Image 1 (cartoon, rainbow, N blue to C red):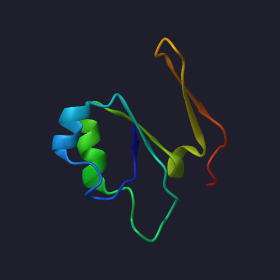
Image 2: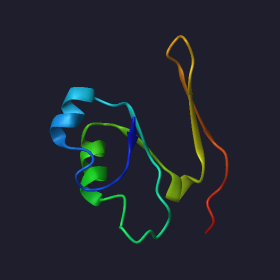
Image 3: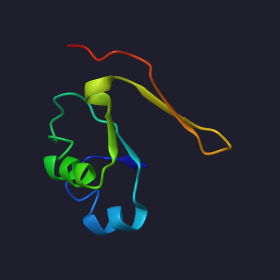
Length: 80
């Protein structure tokens, strides 16, 4: 599941219907939109969703094999 990070991108109803195990938020550090919205992060945390953010972790690759096994790899370290 990929989340954009805006306040309206991930409603409680959507999360209840999908029940995501992981969320990838692709967002630039210090972006002018203020993404990701803190309410989105809180809703995901309340559902127990593991959150991966490119602004904090750098480039992220998610691979899912035919058995449904998920492998997550950080490609680059974020600049500090």
